[in-house]
Every structure is written in C-alpha cells, then in structure tokens.
Image (cartoon, rainbow, N blue to C red; front, side, top):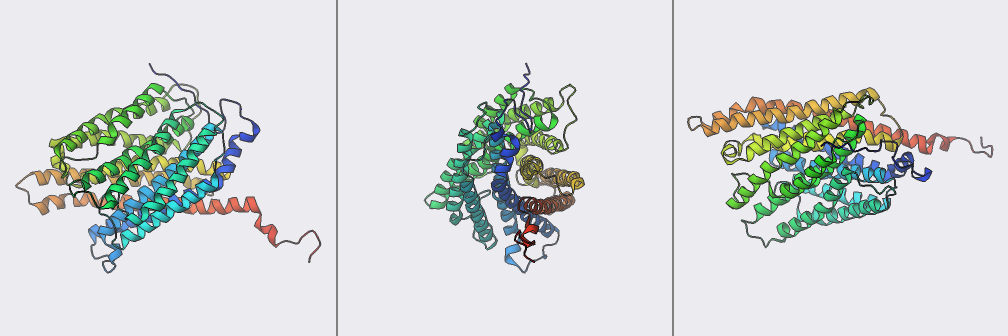
Length: 486
C-alpha cells in the first residue's frame, strides 16, 4: 500500500522552530561556506565542458590544436572526466547534502571554518590532478586518473567535509530522519573507505598487474554508482516533493530502493569484455540486472509523488530538472541491465554505447539533479532572485537538450557500430564510420550544455556581487564621515 510521507516545505517546518533557527537564518549563516564551494564546482564544470567540447571537435578535426601535447584527445578526456566527477559532482553534491542536513535539522553548519579549509584542500587536490593529467602524469585508470600526489589533499579535505557534515547532523534540532538523510549519510561514510583502500593499493605499487583492473574498476564503479548516486538520490527525495508541493508517495519504496541499491550496486562495473576473472564478470552481470529493481522503484516513487491528485499548487519551475533526471535514471537502468547480459555485451562492449551509458548516469541523472538543486538553493542562500530571472528557463532547456544530444545519439551510434562489428562481412572501418554521424550530433549537445553552464557561472558571479553590495554597502566607504569631512 502506498504511504504518503509528509515533508516540510522549503521555508517552513512541521515542528515550530525557535526564531534563532528559522529557515532564513539557517540559510544566511550557511551562505558563505556553501556559496564558495558552489562557485568552485560550477567553475570546474565550465572548464570540463570546454575541454569536452574541444575533445569532441578533435574527433572530426584531429589536426585542431595538435601542436599542443596537453590538448591531445588522450589527455583531454581523462582531464574532463576528473574535473567533472571530483571538481563538480563531488563538491556540489556535498554542498547540497550539508544544506539539506542543516535545513531538515534546522541547525547552522557546525564548523564552517573547517568546511572552508576542506574545500580549499579539495580544490588544491583537483587542481594538482588536472595539471598532472594535462602534462601526461596520470594513472591511466578510469575514474582514478589523478596521481598519488593528489591523494593527501583530497583525503584530508574530504575528512573535514565529513566531520562537519556529521557534527551538523548531530546538532540538528529536528530529530526525525527524512529519507534524504539515509542516502546522504550512506554516501558520506562510503567514500573515505573506498578511496583510502584504492589509493593505498593502486599507488603502493605492490599489486600484481592482474589485480589492478579489478581494484580500479571496483573503486570507479562504487564512486559513481554508490557515492555520487546516493548524493543525487538524497537531493531528489528532498526537492521533488518540495517543488511539486506534494508529500512523498511511498516511504516503503524509498526503503526498498535504498537498501537494495546498497546491497547489489557495489558489485557491478565489469563488462563481459573486461580482462578480469570470469566470476567477477558473472557477479557484475547479476548486480547490473538486479540494480534495475531499485532504479525503477525510485523512479516510480517520484512519478507517483508528482502525479498525486489534489488541489496542491502548480509545481515550481525547477521541477523540470528532476523529472528529466528521473527519466534518464530509469532509461539508464533498463539499458545497463540489457547491456550487461553477455550476449548483448559482446555486441556493444567495445563501442560508443558504453560511453553513452556512462554519460546517461553521470550527466543525465547526477548532473541534472545537482544543477536543479543548485538553482533552488542559491537564491535561498543569498536571499536574492536570479539576476536575469527569465534566463533560468533557457538554462534548463539548454542543459536538458544538451544532455539528451550528448547521450542518446551516442547510444544509437554505439549500437550501429556494434552490429557492424559483429558482422564478419563488414570491414572494421566501415562499421566505425557508420556511427560517425551520430557521434557528430553529440558535439552539438556538448556545445549547448557548455553555453548553459557558462551562463550559470556568470549568473553566480553577478549574484555574488549583488549580495556583497547589499551586505557591505561599499558605496558608503567613499562617503563623508559623520565628523563633517569635506
């Protein structure tokens, strides 16, 4: 039976808070530590999108910028992936998570100075990794490209993030645990042990060569499919009911999706074409197929939440980000389960189809959720509306259209490429060229996505300037003092 779970609104709480812990005061107290990390995260996203655009154009014009070794395709792609995952997704995800914790708990961030130090160390680590990759010093391991020099600042920075988040959680004045808290806490505890384990094993140099792809594949899959995914799920469960002005449709579906995903998701990430033991591939296939159940459970829960009958107000504008994210999430679950089957993976395993699947999860779900949450949270922090409010919808449209063009044509091109490669009568080059028009369409999607994020970053800068003017009144610094100076 579906159970409606009432949730507090964005500006009110079910329990009457004291004036010292009102929503507006919680936001105002958290504005400085959170706004800085949001600016840094979107800045990394803009840079990564530009690098991805250059890399995509180089597929059609290989001679472009070929005189610069740092801008070769083989360095641009790992640099783009690194700064998207670590510079954007992890930072924005943690920022949204601490905001949700403080909002639901009606408490200010405990240790905002430590949060700022953690953000600084984290960005230093990402910057070192980014420069190292462009200079050719990288591990060659997917989602673990940064060299050993980045491990210390990243790990210490994250420890500060995690400690502040847990202290803030402990200091909450509203003790009820809304489902968003489950996903956020799972992510906070999951990352340090997988990162510490992978860093120690992969950077120490004593592993056998056959074990390296297993450890790196395990870490990369857990980082995206557990850590980042749970941050995005926590945000989705918070903002979808709020923006649709309806209670969560079913807490039972949320519980089922939470535990089943934690149980089965960590064992995936290995396709049938990987050079790993067969039992690892078999376990991964089972994991990918079973993950379809929690993914569909979450998607159904959100759909029922938005579609509930009643006289609730019309959903807020930002709900579109989350609806399209839910669509991409369900589509990813279906396609990932289908592609994991050995007979299908032999067709699409070495094609663009795998790239499309990755982008569908990372950009289509995680990216859209975090960007949607950002458009809601930033005006709350600054107590200001977006500078050019009518540009918020174009950002949403360009982002969604860009992501769809980045992913769907690549999936189609990968399928066409795979069917050609599976046919022995079709030459390799002919099969690859069949996918080329579809891959070219993705370049347009990357361009639209990049333009949207540049506009968002400019908005953040303008809003920061307005907030500074309203707060500090710099014009008064140039005026006459009360002593009558002329």
